[in-house]
Image 1 (cartoon, rainbow over the protein chains, first blue to last red):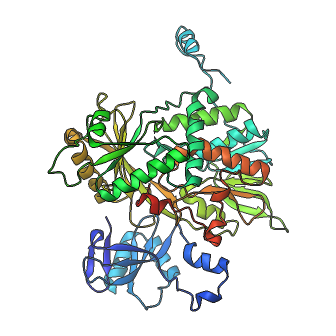
Image 2 (cartoon, rainbow over the protein chains, first blue to last red):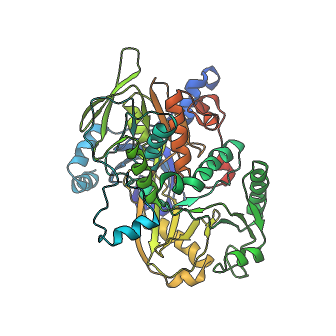
Image 3 (cartoon, rainbow over the protein chains, first blue to last red):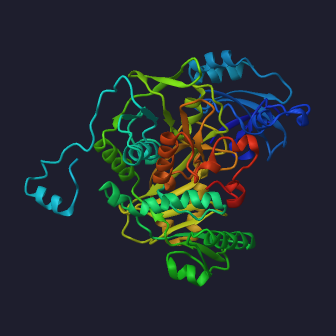
Length: 112
Length: 418
């Protein structure tokens, strides 16, 4: 089970959360101007990376708020969590922390 | 190929079984092939077999990054059924069940296909309505499915606790597909591998595809692998949870997300459970393997992952359900649990067809239920590669449906991953 750091409530077990899929997929400003290809891509295409993945979680049994998490989909290590509206973290920097092992990742979390 | 038979088994017993040959070769990859299948699971090996057998393409290779049958083919709960709601799905999955019925004879390999019946339990009014609709839709499509009352459920599967008023999820009936059942997962991969090898197919293990090379017109011309470059004009990708990564090598984005799906087995016991029981509402499925283990499947984990393991609470949630359904299993000890990475589409129906890249074909998106389709998927992928167009059965399942909005929404029909 993941321990997910909610930016509002702190670290809590995965059972308190609901997964919300890939993050930073903005709904098109004017959907009626899109062609089928672009609308289908918005609805259905996902990056599904083997590596760092920015994703949404909702603390449904806590503050009930959505927020974003960066997680490594190979080891399931969580490298960052941040509020909706905040910029996506530097993924390359997080990848370097990950390469240093889970301890380096945990140390980075504490120093924040 | 050494033909297997009961007589051959007895005859070789007199020679202390020393005269058995290897069932398939271990060839070095050639410089070029007419077609290459990426992924040596049941689906990929099946595609190679049917390409060689039905379409006369013998100069082909199956590339497997690990060992054959070591991915989801070896990690699933081996349930086979075709009681899907929509016409397109019923045709697709029943195509596979029909092939399963003759597969052991066809391959001269005992796949241990056992049509012991798949019973899906109804626990509430919605289940009853939904399953009865499935029963009628299936019958209209020529797929067997019948409604059982709680008494008939008890008669068909005596181990189930049907009556208890104190049950959290009482059993109000069930839908039974008698042609459904189980098969031996490894035997399917090995049987296809042996039969394909006998027809000249090269099965190349420990060979990971690292790039897909395209010519000036954009068509496939070669694949780069960890064992060198292999020229080919046709590539069929059947890589389950890693399909989106392989297709990314050719610049094709896929409507897929990869999730861990867990399963577990108990200690082996004597025959105690005579059919496959599934419950969508309380999310558990169970059958007994020929070895005696109770094979139990759970739902996917909540999040995308390639870790091939999931969280314990998913498995314990499933066991809660099993313990209520079959109280005598409360004293069973669980031996092993594991996860496989399943590629899930938005509508929970597979993608089987051509891609925007010429010469690149895909068979993926089987999500949590690909094993049941193994021979059918291989058969249809082979057709699609050989004819450069989808077979009428898989024509509704091509990638274009996500652009055109004509989804085959088995996710909504089943109300759970299935």
